[in-house]
Amino acid sequence: MTSQTTDATAAPAARATKKRAGAVRRLLRNPLGVGSLAVLAAVIILGQLGAVLAQHDPNFSSLDAINLPVGSPDYPLGADQYGRDILARLIASINVSLISGAIGAGVAVVVGTSFGLLAGYRGKRTDAVASWSFNLLMTFPALVLVIVLYPVTGGSYQVMMAIFGLFLAPGTFRLVRNMVVGVRAELYVDAARVAGLPTRRILTRHILAVVRGPIIISVAFLASQAIGIQSGLAFLGLGDINVPSFGMMTGDAFANIYLHPDQLVWPSALMALLIGSIILLGNAYRDALAAPQSTVKRDKDARRAPASTQVGHPGADSDSSRSGDGVRTNLLTVRNLRVRYPQTDGSEKAVVDGASLRIDMGEVVGLVGESGSGKTQTAFSILGLLPREARVEADELTLAGEPILGLSPKEMRRFRGGALAYIPQEPMSNLDPSFTVGSQLIEGLRGSMSKREAKELVVGLLDRVGIRDAARVYGSYPHQISGGMAQRVLIAGAVASRPKLLIADEPTTALDVTVQAEILDLLRDLQGEFGMGVLMVTHNFGVVADLCDRVAVMRLGEIVETGDVRTIFREPSHPYTQELVGAILDEETLRTDPPPVARERLEGNR
Image 1: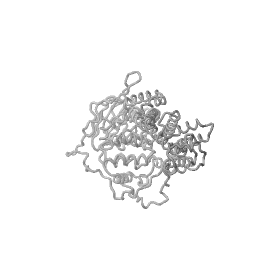
Image 2: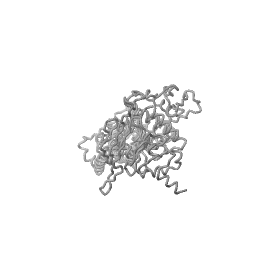
Image 3: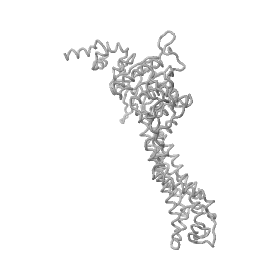
Image 4: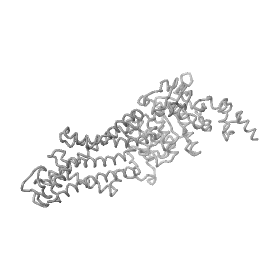
């Protein structure tokens, strides 16, 4: 298959996708977002202009200014019953409330989100311990404990808000943990793990990006809650009397309500504006994040590789799949693999029972069987992607001579995205909808090269796998490309690291017939070019006949027969293999002599 190349710089302008605004720009186009942001910004700016607008210290008291009305000289908003400037105290109260909201919400979100991500992603013991701890923390009456611990804080509202934020963390923890449990099973998370990304990267980029919307809303409500609690405590007299706050001003005005009720309006109205703007801004920003993501602007260097660019296999020559005497060297060895899952009654269910498999360098081996036979479980055992509750055992499981059974996720990253790569059967589900195609493909390459080099390599590979406008696809989001194009994207991502073993799990199942043929041609060309060993997981004997050198037939968790493709098609020995071959509809296209079982069926039909 020859490379199809088109100079992206010469593409017509009509083909360029329309750039859409980012989340911040969409927020600014939302009247609710603009209004709430303007109010919040005005309040914050007012709090920072205290030295300019206030003519007195917030705690300065003058007997001549007691209960001065609004508009009095040097007292624009009047003075309270103690002769203190109301405007100066309002400005000081703004800063106290902002700090209170930042501390309370910050502690709650940082603690709750961090442990929620770990508990939801890790599961099992981490989840059990973290959930138990936060559930226990939730049982304590937060406000009562803050009041009880008031003497310990020394009257510092910052310390009180930090304590209160800790008691708010369980709500954020449960929110994040429950969302992560639903996201961690997404196929694009498995794809990120296969690409060799560390857990920290997966959590912050692929999982946190999905659950961030509800967290932002949580921040807004937690901040407003912290502001309200701090004001309430100050209203009750719990706090430093030398630190003005909305609560303290409200308490003083409430005691003077029968003589000057207007003094109660200023702190109440300003606190309502502050809290309301925070909540509305959080909702508007959440809506902006939920809108379709923008198409990123292409960098000047994001151009397609020239037509003469050939993606090679660095460090390996064309004969790397063979030893010096021309004999293929062993790449993957699976001997007596067993995969079991615990059941509710305490027993274990075996889904793979004693499977053995061998793949040599440069060899394509098909793993065939009906649905539920254990093919994908075997492939995921090699990739290390099975759930934590799965019990995986084997007499031998080695890749390029190194054992890979029982390795930790950190140790397994040495193989994933390098010696080991994976092509899934559902292309669209394995691409994160929150990021562009290019940003996802270069993730696994950034550890070994610069971003520019990774981009050039990926654009060249996209061109190599038959994508006509590779530069455009590089900057597109998954929803902007077709299923067949998405499958080519995943193939390009899989071969980008020059793997020794490529595991393809039903790579053509979701595609139409013509695209299937193109994908098989592409895999055949890439396998020959890079000298990879390939494990083709499929139930389609047509794919096996077209692509594979050898075939292993799997039934009920066991590999019942292994042999070269010609032998399996012409002389299958196991009854199950005979049934599978006999079930091929267009058998004359694949073999000239039907197997015994198929021959009997044909003669019976005649």
